[in-house]
Length: 382
Image 1 (tube, rainbow, N blue to C red):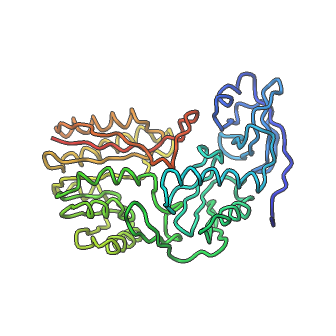
Image 2: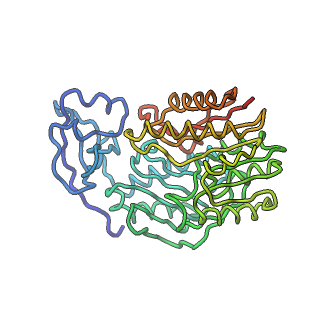
Image 3: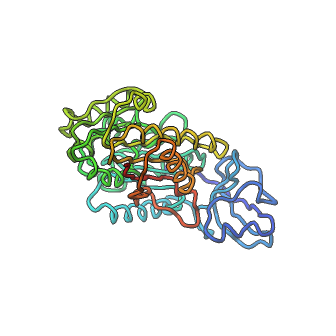
């Protein structure tokens, strides 16, 4: 393999009793938990030891941020192409169990697939990777080679905040199937790894409630909620997003699936559209993360409450609200409380029908609550 990194493995020693969380399965060793953390280039391999020199795990060093070392293995094994190929093959085998015959899925979900800090999606012949870790940037060519050893994978895009790198054959547009929809993706214009695959089963859970209703798809992005609602039998679907680029793709997806006569898309803010006073039988709210840090949580919860209040006020009696949050720092209990407050403030009585999470290709590692982030509530409103 060309350009394969050749790092020495350094030793990092924890303070007394700081190993307990790590021994229970957590993969982040925080900088302030070490009594000795060697100065080293970003991405250097490090073995983490307890204060009495018991081996805890092998990982990689991070120069910036609170996490000092992300653990890759509980063994002092070689981190090389064989190591990465085994991780990728194990992850792929699980996804193929979840979605038999599918060629679109989240292939790697970071910590949950024992490659902390790295995510990768598959869209047919294309794999898109995303990371903020210098370690994976150094191994990008090796990782791409491992992906492209899988039948049907022809190209890889690697993003780490700089200019994207490509490996193999990467086209300007990729066609693929997802849960009965025929879709097109421009990998250069898409956010992060492409689509939001975590909602794939939540969109299906919404479809029975769309039949015969007027639907508002807030923060619609590429229009997947809209297309599913229209195919299920909605009489009208209004998709709203602030990105005209995303809406171009949404319109194309609606046309591709034969529902462009039912769907119309508008470049606007969801709050602006809800303030018009129009009524809907079903509203979907799937906003971006309002709280990207803990410091933003209070402001984010206020914003979630206001957004959901406006949605409650715009629902016909007996209407359905599908409301989501992908903010990790707003946990399920906090999100549930914002919905309750929004319902009370709107003077509407609501019943929670389902509280859902991400699709199973985003599995939650029980020892790392940080891997649980998506909340999707389906409610009936009086």
